[in-house]
Amino acid sequence: MDAVIKVGGSLAKDSERLIALCAKLSRLANDYQLVVVPGGGMFADVVRNSDERFNLSSGISHRMAILGMDQFGLLLAQITPNSCATHLLNDAKQLSESEAVPVFLPSRLIFREDPLKNSWDVTSDSIAAYVASRLQATKLVLVTDVDGVFTKDPKKNEGAKLIERLSAKELFKFNARTSVDRFLPKLLLNAPFDCYVVNGNYPDRIEAILAAMHATWTLISGRIG
Amino acid sequence: MDAVIKVGGSLAKDSERLIALCAKLSRLANDYQLVVVPGGGMFADVVRNSDERFNLSSGISHRMAILGMDQFGLLLAQITPNSCATHLLNDAKQLSESEAVPVFLPSRLIFREDPLKNSWDVTSDSIAAYVASRLQATKLVLVTDVDGVFTKDPKKNEGAKLIERLSAKELFKFNARTSVDRFLPKLLLNAPFDCYVVNGNYPDRIEAILAAMHATWTLISGRIG
Image (cartoon, rainbow over all chains, first blue to last red; front, side, top):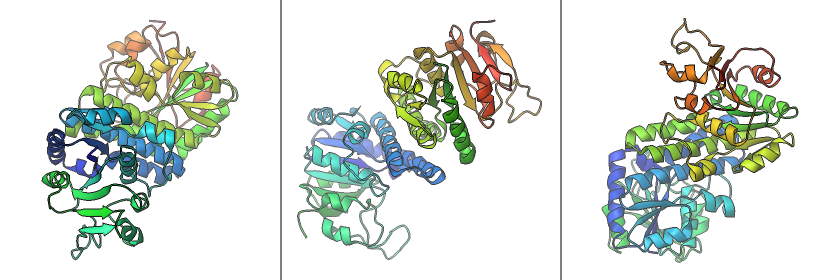
C-alpha cells in the first residue's frame, strides 16, 4: 500500500476543485496503490452543532460524526472516476492493487473496534492514521485546504510560517491549534509511516509526495526527532 | 407492535420541545409497544445541499440521506430515557416488549433490501411505513411540526384547513405538496395499518392516538376509500 489519502471535508466548499482533485487521484491510482479515507466536513459540522444544542455524550457525537465520514465517502466515490466505496479493509486493499480507487467508509470498522478516544480531538485525521496502520501503508497523506502545518493559524495570521518538517514529538508539544487534529501526534509517535499535510487545491503536490519529489507541504515523521 | 413512531427531523429545531416529546415517548412505552424511527432533518438537509452542488446520483444521495436518519436516531436514543438504538428489526421488536424504547437505525436494512425507489420522493415517512409493515405494527404515527395534512401549506397559507381524515387513494390524487412525502400514499394504499400525521409539539396527541381517544391530527387510511 503506497498511501492512505485523507480528503478533507473543507475541500468540498469548492465543488469544481474537489472534482479536479478526485480526477487526479483516479489517474494516480494507475501508478500507485492508494486508499482514500473521507473527512467529515459539512456532514460532521451538523453533528458538532447538534452536540452543542443537545449536549450529547462524546460516544454518541463520535459515532454520528463517523457516519458523516461515510456520507462524504459516498460523495467522493461518486465524483472519483474508477472508484468504489467499501466498508472492508480487505476489499480496499485488493481494489488498490487493481488500479481502482477504493474509498474506505470507516463506520463499521471503527464502531466494531472502537480503537480511538471518543472525543472531538479525534477526527478523520486520526481515523485515517489508524486505517493507514491497519493497511500497512508507506505514507499517510492528509489533504486539506491549507499548505500544511503553520507556526500560527494561516487564515488569521499573516505572519504565519509553513513548517516544512517536524517530528510527531514536536507536534505533540505544539501549543497552537493546527490544521490536524489534537490526537494525531500521539498516533504518529511510533508510526511506521510518514505523514504529509498538503493542500488539495494543488493536486500535483500529492503526485510529488508519491513520487518522492519536492514540493510544498509539511512532513510529520514519527521515526525521527 | 402497537405503533411505529417516526419523529420528524424538523422537531429538532427546538431542543427543549424535542426532549419533552422523547420523555413522553419513554413514558408511553410503559403501556404500549413502540418502535421509534428517526427522520432526517438537518442531517438530510446537508445531503440535499451536496446533491444540488455535486449533482449526485439518486442512489448515492438516497444512501447518504439514510445515514442522516441513523445520525438523528443516535441523537434521539441519547435524549430518550430508557431507549436503545438498534439496526436489527428483531431487536427492536424484543426491546419494545420490554417497556424500553427501541430507536431503529434504518441504514443496514434499507441498504441490504433496497425496497423503495431511490429518490427524494422517498423520505423517512416512506421508510417508516416500510418498517411498520415489516414489524406488523397496528399504527404508523408520523410526528411532525404541523397539525397534520392541510388543504394547502399551512406555513404559507392562512386559509389552509386541516384534513382530519382521508384515504391513501385521496392523498395519492392530491396535487398540493403536503407534510408527508410523495411516495407514502402508494405504500399506504394496501397497508394493514392506519397512518396518523400529528404535531409533536403537543405530545398528548400521540397518547390520544395510542389510546384511541380524540384529538387533532390527520388519519390516512389505506383500507377505506
